[in-house]
Length: 215
Length: 87
Image 1 (tube, each protein chain N blue to C red):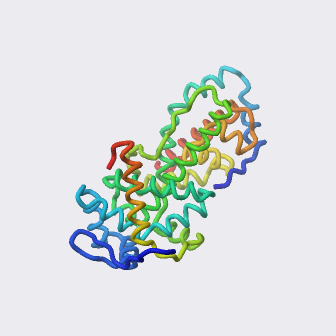
Image 2: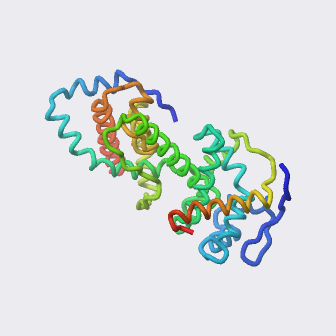
Image 3: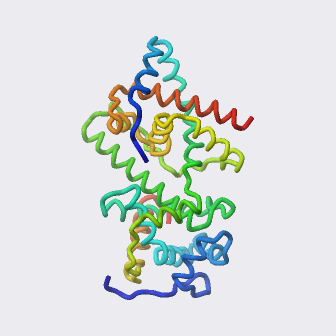
């Protein structure tokens, strides 16, 4: 790659080595995490912070996006840009008690990729006029009341009590945000009422088991 | 994510509720169950160790990011966000 490689980036009034910054952002409550969060929140330094994130995280984030969620390079680049927008817009949602800053950025990248896939799939469906109405594009921007560690563990246990099919259906509907048309396409079950009922039943079962797990 | 499902499991579950009234009840109650989606999104969040695992399995370019590339990325994000008046 041509161009000037940068070894250090500016964070506040400090210069930080790119490699060291990447390592530090993977640690909970590092000084560099505090600096980059503060910089992102300040309009005067937000660009410096985004620049630093690009310098140290672009390659690994794009590698993971490409490996797991997106196939073509244009989509990987678009999701990366969306990730940067999300990181700036949603910095107030970062909680150092829940994850490292690095993990939080990877989650934002994952959500950007899933939103992109969802938009692309809906555009394809609309192009083929197979949906009667335009479904609402659900995004990962919704701020959700965070689960406590106990609730999170209970929900994970409840999920494991579902069948593989039930987990897959709920994942497609609620995590991937697929429409019933997309689920029909992905699974080969063409009757959407059948899918609706199956998803509904899986959700109801998960809810019941979740309540049981919480006692 | 695996999209393999047991079609027989899905379709037979509906066989048991052929009565139209029951199906209507399920569909009417569907929106109430969207809250489970919010919960599922949270447990689908990557944890610190999962991120390291994903990175280890991915092919990560070793090309350093250049100043020009990083500057362009930030500018592109700004342009995109400006459409939504975010940045």
